[in-house]
Amino acid sequence: MTSSYLEGEKNALGAFGYNRDGKRGKKQIDSAAPSPFGLSCGLSVSLRSAVIGLLCDGQGVALAIEVFAGNTLDPKTMASQIEKVASQFGGGEVTFVGDRGMIKGPQIKELREHGFHYITAITKPQIRALLKADVLQMSLFDQVLAEVYEGKVRYVLRRNPRRAEEMKASRESKLGTLSTRVQEANTYLAAHPRAAVSTALKALRKKTAKLKLSSWCGIRQSGRARKVELHLNESARAEEEKLDGCYVLKSDLRPEQITKEDVHARYKDLAFVEQAFRASKTVELEMRPIHVRKEESTRGHALVVMLAYRLAKELSRRWVDLDLRAGEGIKELSTLCLTEVMSGDKVLCSTVPVPRPELAEIIARSGITLPEVIIRKNAKVAT
Image 1 (tube, rainbow, N blue to C red):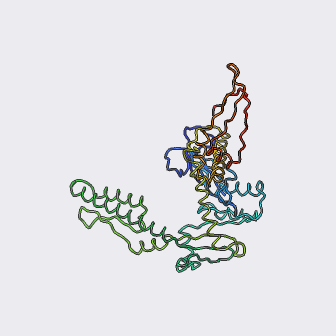
Image 2: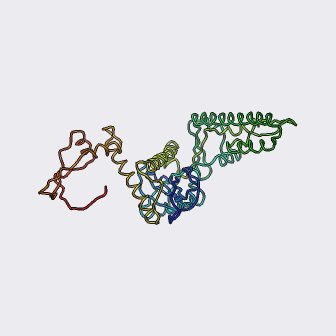
Image 3: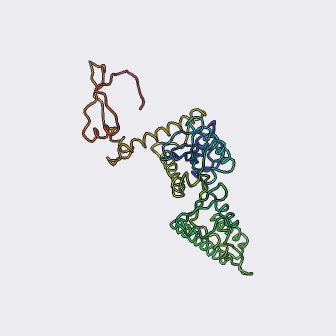
């Protein structure tokens, strides 16, 4: 799922919801997405807001796009994607790949009813619950890739050392920021005898919560002095750091159907869906903001962007040996002009000149055959 925002107040699908673009006060729409081991469910756009769901195959090629109202929750977009795959794409033994929060209990039940499978990830609280129940053990994260079975459910475990270092650095940076704020507060309290310590405590505790350090950082008054101090709960800190870089995948696929390495690889394929959204929401394809009003216009806008993305991906694939991206190649092609053949002041037709060698190569790799003559239809075209 991704988010994109709407301009204006009258879009038929617009509703206020969680906006992944960080746009406040904008309505949104949402979108959802799938992969060809099966299908990756990943995209949802929020606009004053509408949600957009993108269905992709395993290589990240967009197959279908659907627009939902902006206050639609991610899991609620799954039912229509499951039905779409079952009825429009032939069904079969398909596996849906979805991120945390996308594929939950009700969605898993519906997938089973259609004979589909799933690969998803579980949350940190769920990992801790499984560790407490001794279904998982921390020692398993020391392996490159481990797996555990609980009934028909299969868990694949991994620790990413690089991610663990990033999380540690981020935590230290946040702690440094909070320490600086505490020092600034004490400096202010010392210089302003009438300033209330309670006000400083309130502001610092709010900052602690915003930095998500409340589980192991506390702010308190230093005795009876007009000072505040930072208190660290080291045991709680160690407990939080324990799962840094750790993640657990969940699937109902059996070992004879897919190896644990392939389960992990198919989950990582969700990056293709994220790439599709990033490309669709950039300046070139202009998914956002959405300026249209009617429901069919909003859906049409999303469809055109999806088709443009497919074209860009295909052109990039065909031009890969030329070291050209789609935008660069199209810019080169825009230099090719027509020659008008006129009789008096009337244009009879246009001829296509022989392109220079560089352009001829781009055109050949595109699989396009240019006509020699274009008959003039006297139609005015804006672009």
